[in-house]
Image 1 (spheres, rainbow, N blue to C red):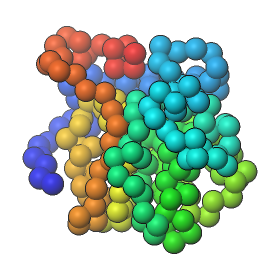
Image 2 (image 1 turned 180 degrees about the vertical axis):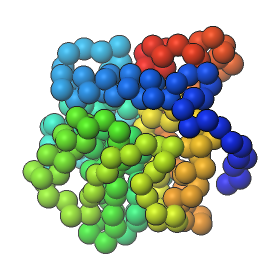
Image 3 (image 1 turned 135 degrees about the vertical axis):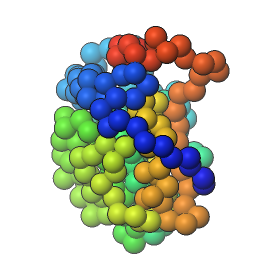
Image 4 (image 1 turned 45 degrees about the vertical axis):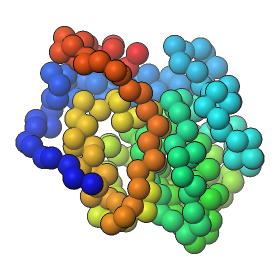
Length: 210
């Protein structure tokens, strides 16, 4: 994969403050973690798993606290099967549903690292893993623009409804390339638009999070 590089401010991209955007996103997903049944402008939980085609057997044994705060946009696990022994990174893991599904697939000879920037989500994910005790799972605090993962570690990177939330997508892709092994693969489910987003819209924080 070839990714063009250029220098960009760490504090702003696409005319929006990265710090302000992150805070708004964290606030939104803190609420999803703390009050998953509240009702949002997007589907969540088991209802969403059915909408995006998750197999019921994938969810067997996964604690409800991980499932109830699921807020993805698709099904990255359906793109290609996760294989036993693989190392997987789940970017924007939330409460851990995709992390746990991947962990069951890689087995005890693989490893899955879930990364998220929202502490309330990571707390739920860690609590869920204490309940099921998967030794091949680890959760880390981090940003997709600066992944806390060693170079060339991952066989697979999965991400579900997160890539769209970064205004610095070239930086995110650079990090994904850095973390992947040669021949590694990306399995991303996300939102796409079919026309150019106006510059004025890119500067509105509420449009990024809503």
